[in-house]
Image (cartoon, rainbow, N blue to C red):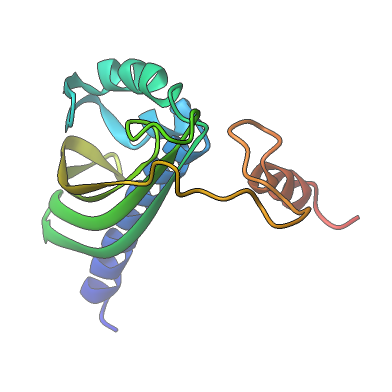
Length: 174
């Protein structure tokens, strides 16, 4: 690879990491991680919300309380680079669940696209403006089943297996 291709590859990778970091933050209810995906003056356009990134994170904190959990599954991703600007389009599916299990507003799956205007500032890519385009929504009310046995469960706090593994990795060899 040439130096230009290496740089382009690294930029695309960093942009994809911004999207993934955002999804992890939403699913783990880590609002600081969500906020880190945006530049300070970032803007977000979501179903039910339109405003600054700070306002969005505040709105999201309340909106996510309706759910026991969410899972964002990212699919196709393309980033078109224009110097220190990029347009990133990410296809995905977002699963939402909560109580009561038969409430379609708390138990649904949606197909979405994140259309992001990303900018690089001081070597850091982040979202300047996001359009969260909801393509479809399907009710999952009454369809979720209990786990079939003991095993790890996802948590929306520091006891999630992700954070336990991260702490062990940070501590180094035992």
